[in-house]
Amino acid sequence: MLDVDGGLREAVSRRPSATNRALQALRQLLREDRWIAGDRLPSEPALAEELGVSRVSVRAALAQLQSEGLVDRRHGSGTYVNSVRPLVNSLHQNVGSDQLISSGGHTPGIAEMSWRLGSASEDVSARLGLEPGAAVVDLYRVRTSDGTPVTVEHDYFSAALLPPNPASLGASLYAFLSDVCGVDVAFGIAAIEPATAGAELAPVFGVSPDELLLVIKQVDYDADERPVSFSIEQHLASAFDFRLVRQGPAKGLSG
Image (cartoon, rainbow, N blue to C red; front, side):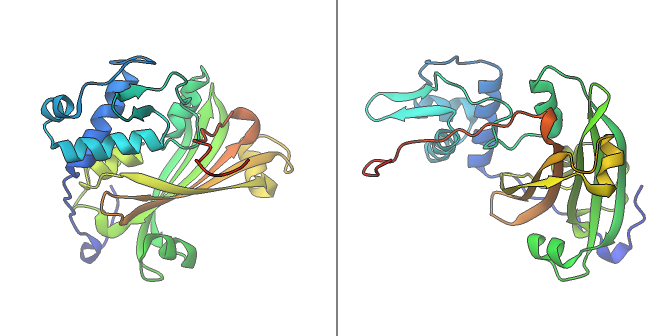
């Protein structure tokens, strides 16, 4: 249990928007192969009735799925599941490291994990829209693939999101934020850059200091576009095969 000063605790309860609920439900149905590649999805009214939301919410959710490359909306015909489905490790999808590891046929695990309460650095506070030095929780994890360390993560979020006396923080940040703090992440914006393991991370990964890493720095937002968490993921480049799904080309633009 974290020992957080009572003045820093603030129970936050935010019900996910109808659009976000529809989006998550449709993603789940696609993952479960409710519809396979090339299938036409039910009409917007039928989906709205099934999901218990408005047609406007369904339309917005489908537009988001189209932007992610999961579906193709054809004017006058309907919405179809793309025949070339994005891979789980496509960088346009906001998935956890466990899923990235599992998608390659490996067994994910955690070699080390700690939750620490501290003061936000200038960078972290700016990313989360907090005052410099504000109290934040830092979730540190070393993730493994078949027992070998492949990812080092730091996830930061405001300590003000913590409810009083959280009994268990668990290993999943998104689950904790949703189930315990009442905050659902709707999307994330990430920057990607190369790095080397260096003297600090080389012993953690069991590699040489000049081993190549892929660093993903991401801010996650709720449906109202408020920053929720900031993560720094340092992936062993040799352990992952990341892809990008690129739409287009846009009409009127030359290659």
